[in-house]
Length: 519
Image 1: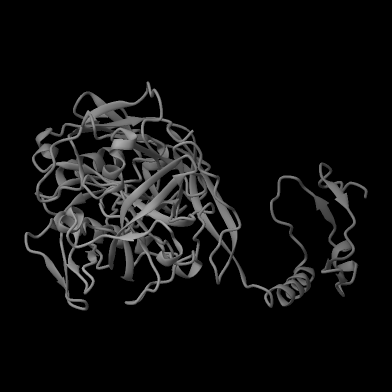
Image 2: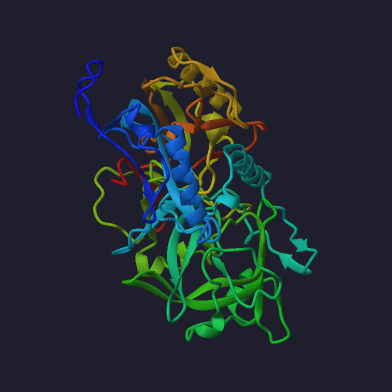
């Protein structure tokens, strides 16, 4: 068509009608020709006159909702171009089916000794379920529940699960709440694949099992059936692992485990051995795990959990002889991208700097203790005495979202960050997050760098994707919070760990940080 003199740069075409499923819709051609149509490579969505769109929508909905009710849902993200620049804002949308929650995208296959890590709510997740998707306030409240559990410590006395009468040893059931990074592993022979959370704050690994005599929550994959595996075996009450981690015995002297987590989620079942397939070339035989037959709580649609804590029954400990006592992971910068979990050394890593793992706290033996000694903002070391952190201690945790610091250390960080961000409009706070910004209409921002200094001369310069927790474009908050109790331990959460190769060299007693790990 001829160019519009007022807008001569565009390519005009004559749209005269629409069809759905081969059926021409009863829309007068003048609906389109009266206003005109351009074809434009830079616009994502096709925009139509309202009456024409209504006819298209109604016919499409009527045809396809009878087959499967699709839902379109989106995530908001902050992207960055370099260490100091965030480009705002992109909306990632994906199409998933409401009944099954299966993402339209599939996981990249794990290879070598690497398992693909995805965020539970991202478009690469195999377990998306819009009915179980949490909003940001719910995520932060669950994160706080996990932290309260960590801070409260572990009671010397065991607790009782009143519904089962099974004693829950606190050394097994650490805290669990927001661990939103998952991997896919295989259990049994023949192998069945399951999506599980991995958590450095937990020891025992478990999945839900048939016949679920005590009840199971809804999960994405079919439940594991021990009777269909040739390599499954229950662990007897007389075994050493049962004496260490079991809670009770049934009539046939089979060991029963029970775990209650910090958010009151729980799992009870049989302690067993099975073949665990990490990747096609990495298989562990006689892997000790929990076959859960009474499970409840806020687990979402995952099949269970893989524990990477320091306890004897964790995957990290059971695989230590095979993989040299080393594992590492990289948490992706965005929910729409992937990271990895690796068992064993992945080869020379010249950019990884190591800080010592401190001795285990007998009251909390599963966690990885490091020595945080200082903070920096915009390259400026903050005047915080190292004793602010060393007097209470610090752990690094894959399952906590926000980084929690002693109140005086956090106040110094917050005040300097606010000073260097004075040109941006602040926004209302979120739970636990009091330094939030409204970037509506802002094309890009320059964030001051944030650094965490550890003993051994190691600094974790937080990737820009981990400095802010973006609930929305109008409410992006500093991903740090202050502990209300001055005696509470500091927790390095997973948001600030993004994009780093976090190497747990337990054999040497070191934890390393390497920038650009996911690339």
